[in-house]
Length: 539
View 1 (tube, rainbow, N blue to C red):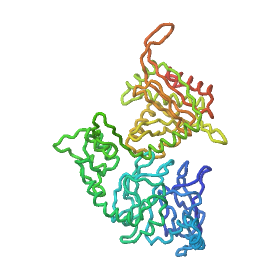
View 2: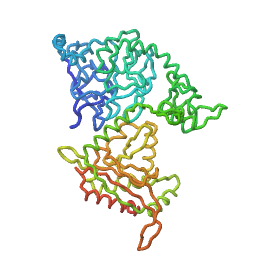
View 3: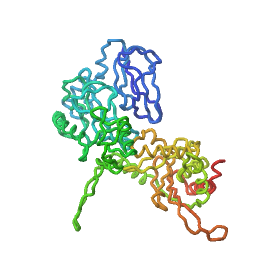
View 4: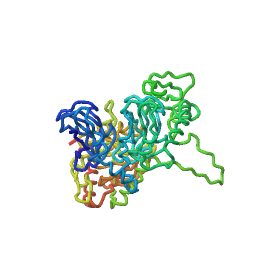
């Protein structure tokens, strides 16, 4: 008899899982102990083995898709065994009841999955980060009627943290697009339908709809077909502000080299510009400046020329909030309104730090910033004051004895916090290289979600903008965040004499539920010792 395999609970806090990779496909023979798939939990990606033998008859959750614990993951049984009853879940009577009881309708909607024609795959909005609740389709790289191969890039999806390429795990023809470019939709909404050419999928699209537009889906399909040629023409337009299809890496390389993407011919799908196209590009006679390249890249988010506003006239415009901006607003509001913040400020003498940095940077191929020194000092201070390296929950305070420092990075749409894992075990030069790499990829929206998870403490530095002192909102679930100001030259008293010195103010924002005032003050004293005497960080 066939066995139903459900999404396992692989950690104590896991409520849903993502299938990272299927290691078996439908029709494969399964032995007890075989690894079926790699499941991504809220903590790690783990191998999931089968406790049954037989043939893999059905896969319920596709690669890249998420589902709650206990959802149908797979069915294993005898080769050729009829599993239609298991797919329906024995809920046929409920469908009949739903005709007379309206509240039952929503419960039975998912059961229409059994009516999907053979070979048709419903692709839903993926959950591409741990905090993602909805996504925006930045660009469609395929249009209705296009042939899709496994591994082809379907679209670029904007999450709350980055814009990421979303590839197809199935082959077929793109039959339906459920979310248009620039539109947002919750995770698990119908993104597209792939299947054999000519298949009627209008009923499938309707049955899988979970909220959204009241417009019938059949009309949306027709509208999509009508507008696709227009969209294609837009991607071919390069000099008048139209969109250019290019991978994020190709855009960054073009920006670094000062290449105007409108002059590059793409060799990828539908003329998409990829890395090799930019690297092999030979400039034309027309000079291209880096400024024009920047203008091309950012044209979709802000006008190249500010609108003219006559004197004495009012003018305003609405800028659609990105997923990143919405998430920043939600999470910081939750932090500010739930965690009782208080602030501690100290002034640090930076003369010795400046001398030490100059000495370190005199070594060939070595570049360390003051921010790197602050991060290193914080990591060492947190090892001595683990209470600051904690997080609050209603049942207990979690004190972390590992140090993962998040470094706040300003990007075009807001703020992201890439994380340096086990920062206390890194040298200054390793911190410097890691921060440079993470910050660069953050600004180009190339960070992976895993690189922005797991922080235990955060550093935010506005000193490079000339800000001498400021306070930050705690990046929960952290209990504290350090705000770093600019180094300024001013008169100071040293050994009873007024001399010129260099000082820097830092402010520690603490969650009073976990960090008492004295604890925060002791942490800052230790931090000051490390920064004022950098040689102590080598001990």
